[in-house]
Image 1: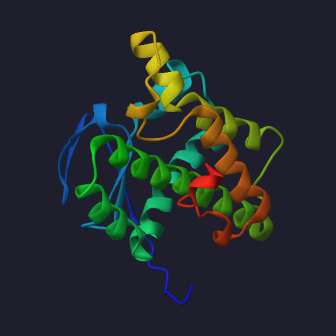
Image 2 (image 1 turned 90 degrees about the horizontal axis):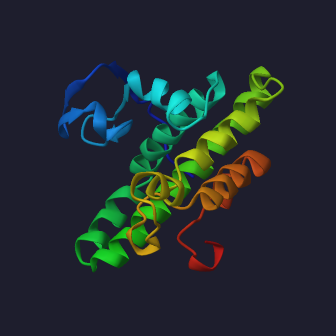
Image 3 (image 1 turned 30 degrees about the vertical axis):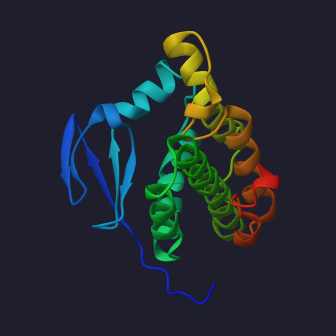
Length: 189
């Protein structure tokens, strides 16, 4: 896309960490901070992914990192800044929809990474794709809301439903094409 890729740094932490985006606790889950271009992973999240969300496996973990790196790519391409600006001028419901579009695009970008990583280094083993799809499904807003409060409120989604997350990861994995990750075309949601 005419840009030079700059690798993000990976920060592994336990309990809490100070980032350029402020103090963060493990309760936040994995995150990307555009101000320091770092991906932050609390190692206890992987235990939660396995035990609480029922999504074990090394490729489920790789999916989480790739999703956060997807946010880094959005930052490098200027997408994150545009969406942040739009969100600041939107109603809460519209801001949530924009957040979902960003998250689904990061899911698609993680699939693009998996496609190219496998082509270059043959990293995918039997069951890996299922692990990633299970992780994407397990951390969908609908499933998390149902587990947490017993009911689902789609207008409050910030990451997308389980089905959406799976669909967008698969789109990236099947095509390997960044251009197929335009979640901002609302007819594609």
